[in-house]
Image (cartoon, rainbow, N blue to C red; front, side, top):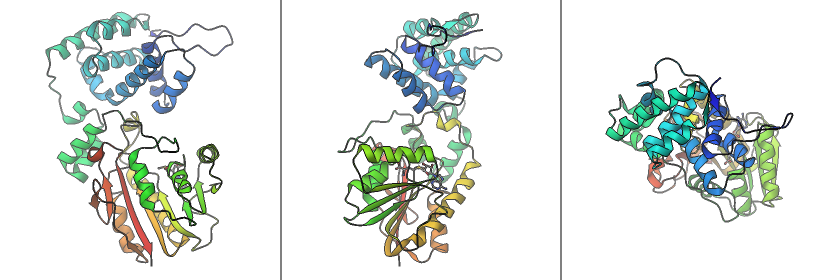
Length: 392
Ligand SMILES: C[S@@+](CC[C@H](N)C(=O)[O-])C[C@H]1O[C@@H](n2cnc3c(N)ncnc32)[C@H](O)[C@@H]1O
């Protein structure tokens, strides 16, 4: 069988991670291909490896970049690879092609160091195809068949965002989400994208208030709200494992007023009018955070959107009565589709007349319905939507 080289191991022991950056990247790509998430697989493999810091960053760049540009890589490869390739050979072809077309790695290193990680009969094929891809890239510019292949997104995401945002705005958003995310930290050390920090500020917690976060895990916004002086932050999540992460974060950040509860946000034990503010940071298609989750674009389906919008509406139905009269309900999602943003706002306007809109955040947010939409290209952040409403 062809495949990336395995680290040597003693019988009965867990296999040692490969000893080179490209070997580790190939292992990670195979794990993602088998259903793992890049942002889980990569830290786990790096945690068990002996690579130095420079190589660790290189592994992350290689895996994230190859996952992002997978469709474009496959198109460059398939012009030269006849027939189907097994997963290990395909991973090596994608990894080599990514280096050739999207990094400054010199041609010789990109080809030979990638080929060196492939064992078995696939090795000569990987070598031959990568040399041809290198020739194509050098000859450039590449004449892509369509924008979705060039930008490496599934057709449906390109079509949906073009329809919802306009083709020019959608293209800029898609390009921006191919740029690696910067790491941004809060003063308390919690790593959180600037857009999420802005949403937490927009919730506007006042000292002494009781706040409910109905979809709280992993706790980014709940910990920000608890750190802003709230008397109580009740952090609810339906997923017990993810709720445990909220509790661990609250403990680490020493936030005794943050209480975690495992419950379905559509059916919580709270009495009506119990909270000054309720945040529904709802499950969504995540199309605003694709730069941070490089493999997510290949997992979603168009049929997810109506299902998620229905769940968002049911969570809001449950959340609205929990806000005290005069209190505030905030809806946010990390996506850009109209169905999950302005569409939800339109539904709230007709079905929840007891809720009146509050002003959306200022620029770089733009108006979307009665809420604010932050495009990824507006400030180099995640894409987000937020809408605040006061209960009459
Ligand atoms: C966008 S994430 C929340 C992110 C979080 N607010 C933060 O800032 O870190 C959505 C969360 O909703 C949770 N969820 C999904 N369905 C739910 C439901 N019916 N009730 C409560 N939580 C739910 C998911 O487990 C997920 O953790």
